[in-house]
Length: 199
Image (cartoon, rainbow, N blue to C red; front, side):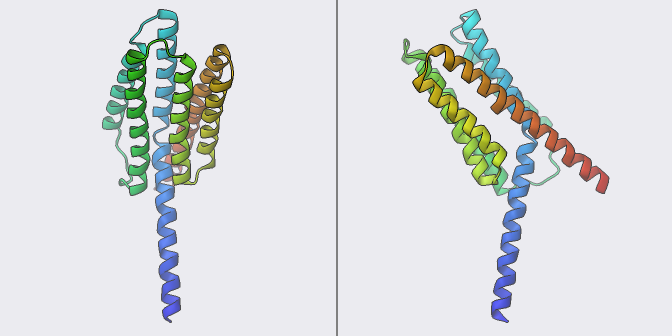
């Protein structure tokens, strides 16, 4: 009897963990718009700095994207309560974003003349790290593919020319931010339709 009680308790704990992971994945799916927003922001900053020659293109664009993200989250209402997994995922992205903002401003203003490939390699590695951490937490293979895309961009930046690095970085933004963000938005839309049908 005692063994049965332990087995039931173990099953209940596993079910709880699976529900928390599923809820965390649904929560991240609801953030698909942020992936698209930041992908567009990366393109704006890149082309503004490259074509416009504006030294502050990256910090200005990233700060604007952060404000839009904050406004978007403050206006959005979530039906599901916040979970530990959801907070963990949000923490990973906030910490990664803050790290990139501080590091790249420091590089831009303190280490002028640094090989631009170092910037692309570091940015790609940090974004890959965030995607991998989230994919491991959520047990989500699709997001791990994003991590592989970004890590590939890191390797390309370290071993190829600047031109190839730039093209690879732009492709990684498209696949890892815009396409994956759109994919998450589609999943969220399907989830909402299913909830509406069952309601």
